[in-house]
Image 1 (cartoon, rainbow, N blue to C red):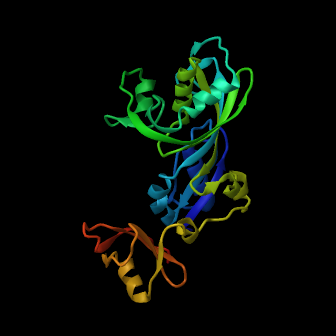
Image 2: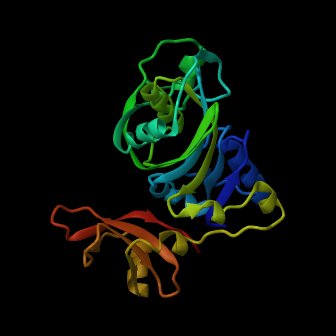
Image 3: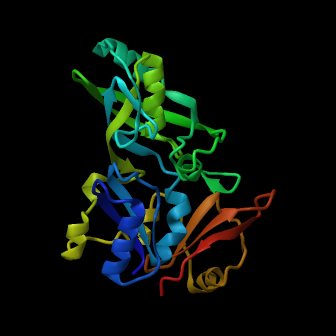
Length: 286
């Protein structure tokens, strides 16, 4: 079994829980995911099966869309509602001011990684520093907010939709929004509605999968937006053996398929004069 399966992750499941469950259902060891969701979060979690694990690097770079619900007047150490409260305050906020602040985050931002995260600093996960009350300088990274949409504002919470680049922490974004508002904020709920081309409409619950109601997304369907080249059996054998090929193509990355639409490999240009392409990923789908 090779390909991708889009899961609608439930609250309180870790991404690893989902991987383990799918591995158990399909009785296979080669299972992974393409982008962690916090236990509090729900929604799109793309699961890679078998040779699909070779696609993880490509898919984890995709943009992601979220619907976030935010608690006003309260901040926690984990930046979400499950953490210990570290600050509360009174506040006044109207929709126009909130829209203005949300829109100010559009574009490139420098974001501080949350302390409660799996990012490594000096070989150690940040959440290990937090659990042992150790001081650590939190890394900062460049992220991009591509879309931002105000959805609603109630007495003590608001919701927004956002599309972000790889590596963006919505918890950190909410913290930064609160700092601009001068109101402590924390994440109340989060739903990932899309990762790259995969949306909630493509997803299945764990219960669906257990009942056999699911569809594995083929390599061809995953990669069909890339430049594709159909090759004959002579070139197919070279590709299967990981051979370097002459570059007869205009694109930096090429997906090679055979006449039966079986995906053979992803190649990329590697020589300075662009005369050669080398295998980036070769798939064993026999």
